[in-house]
Image (cartoon, rainbow, N blue to C red; front, side, top):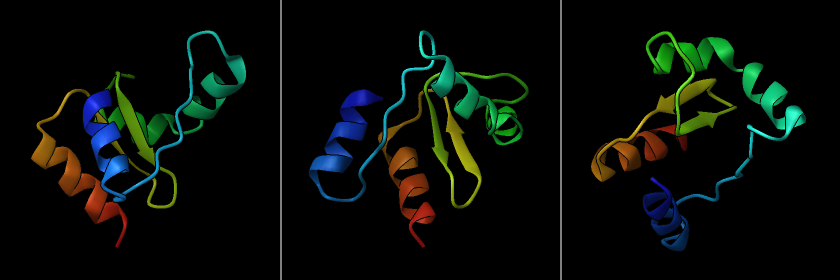
Length: 78
């Protein structure tokens, strides 16, 4: 998913904030604050990769085809 995220950034579609959550407890707590949204997107578990739209309180979980990923990103910008 990283190459796809990089491509969307390069195209100027979005700028991602990236947080390491395994070794950084502050970032892990931030991710946990979106537990409900993440569990819904990940079908009951926390998964990776996990993309969170804080404003819409929406998430995209796991590997997805590029078209699906881009559609989710573009729908979050509306």
